Image (cartoon, rainbow, N blue to C red; front, side):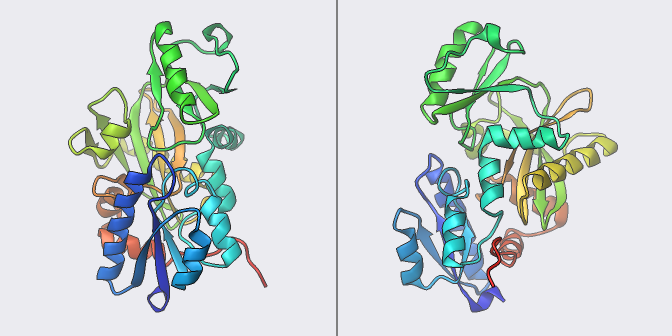
Length: 308
């Protein structure tokens, strides 16, 4: 059905993850064109509505990451324009991007997530006020790709971590550090397709480790005993469903030595670059080539708000 429509690959955008999005979009466009889809690249700016109308776009593959693309903003515009799009709808996108609200949704659904506190710019952050002790993690509430994230192991590191996080957002999250295996679950067609383990060369799976070849080891399947592997996948699916996500996502977990699965976040528009994890999970877990994955995603494009 989608091969009869003009598809706009929305990429680039206005967020701190622009460069990653450009790579994702280029890879997606190449895969679509190679399969005979009528697709064009659209570098998203504030004139997006006009560009979509001028180009006659009939469906959108969203390859944006971060603010204005992954947080429900573009999804809302596409709903108004009645252009079907890939991925989750407005509400799920906004919830997943906002770490405080997503963690509250996880907790309400009985899903483990690290204890946390949120602070707005100007509020004092004191270690003595926290219900957990060092080490801890400081991160912006609405950023992806580990932008602005720090691990604080000593009291003297807190000020720099706060400054970095507030550089990216007016609200930040301070959470308890959980020691565990970094495991990421791929969701496709609203079902888990595998779990991959990440072993970063840096202290954690930061921006450099995510987007620099050789900075992280990818192990598939994740090194978990069979029962725990299945549980990790089900926790990933539960987190996807708790936010009301649609179609596909990548869920980031920490799996402790005691077998506890803590959800870090749900990525509603996971990366589609050469080093991205969802394509790797789909290939190794479901036998899908990158082109087949892209085709599967575009053919799930829909509107979440039904209009008679």
